[in-house]
Image 1 (cartoon, rainbow, N blue to C red):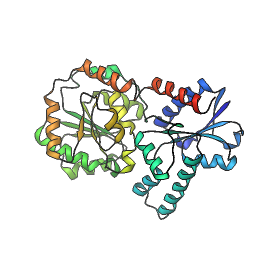
Image 2: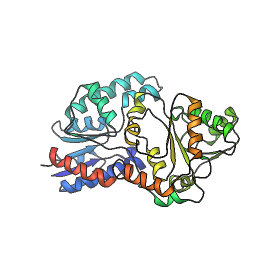
Image 3: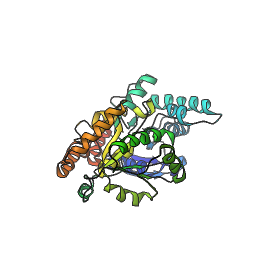
Length: 339
């Protein structure tokens, strides 16, 4: 049985490529052939096809309504459009994507979700049962980097990092407001912001009258090496459904580099899978308590070797493990599709 992966260039970036490579490796164990395509005319009726969203799934079904399809649901598009899309055709797009999801979930042969919360969202919203023909795998693109934990003096300084855009959904105001309070009790604290939107970042720094902030930009490959020198990393999100179901790759990047995450507890996958993490700061609504919790972390003597073992054993052996997910996917594919 042959498998075609429909993966257009517009959907390809570091996190999605890594995700699909894991799926591909699992497929090679159960399929006679695995081929990437960017044109649906290359599909044969008896192929199993992998797609990366509900819209692509519908495109396949318009060509052959009996095609077996594995669909990776990367996000919940109607809810994302409500938050992030501002053009005049906003509600038309929301309705359209709702139809895409509804039809896709009712015809999919096998579903890939990034979190249990996402699966729960879809099954409740569209009243479908996907227990047997689905698998949960978070978004991630880095393996654990042991040497990142042993950068000299890494855990002795209150250094903070944020890497990403200056978009409002990244909660830049909340991050800088918190850091302003940190500066008041830890004058030596430093924040480095890596962003392509440097001018916007400078305006934010003026707004909050911050002194110990560095603004820079580095290409991804350089950035992945540069950030390992930092102690803390920010990942703040608003408590809305779009964020509850997500698994931002920034968390994987931080933990792979031995960075202690400062993050919002609204991301359900992190709430469920980071319970054994020795050093972390889950932000609450109480700013004073958040600052006190950070000061408690600052008073701790971080056990570097122990922190590495803790992250390796509890997170990168399962939640962020390619081998773990490949094995589980092979079992599920054999059971549901490749019999």
